[in-house]
Image 1 (cartoon, helix red, strand yellow):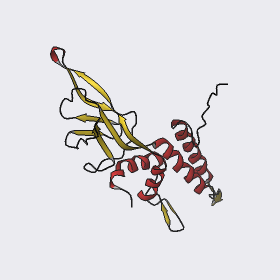
Image 2: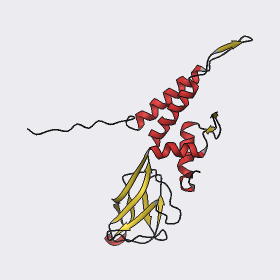
Image 3: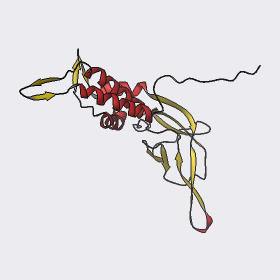
Image 4: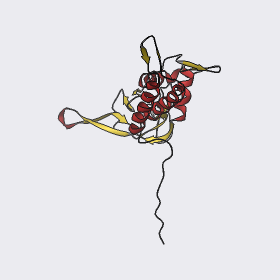
Length: 193
């Protein structure tokens, strides 16, 4: 069953992929219910562990500097459910800073404290999701499903169902390009002799 903390991400990905709640069924699995979309998202999850957030100073009157806003280098976070282990803000000693002290803009990775933090270092442990890569994955799966569609003509009308596959592949390629490519990344290492 899809986690309630994933609702925003699931709906965003559903919009990116034109995935209805019951587009088609293969065997006993219905695509694209929330469980199926969450499975794809979980394949494209980045577990963030104690990332030091970047503080953003704000300048007040008389030359004062305040610190309310902190940013992560990641985005598209799974929402917290009242301080659950999904999105945790801590200070350097590891003490959890409860959700009553801050609000989060989960899609953009921004945490805003309700009072000035004086530049205290804060650390984030959370789950971030690569939405473009997940969208490319879903479009690829849709293209595979549409590969069985065929063109036909009847009563003077022509039906080009093969266009579904072509458009799904084009969308897969589009989201893959936004995600920095798909699949495995190669790393070149220089070896000193």
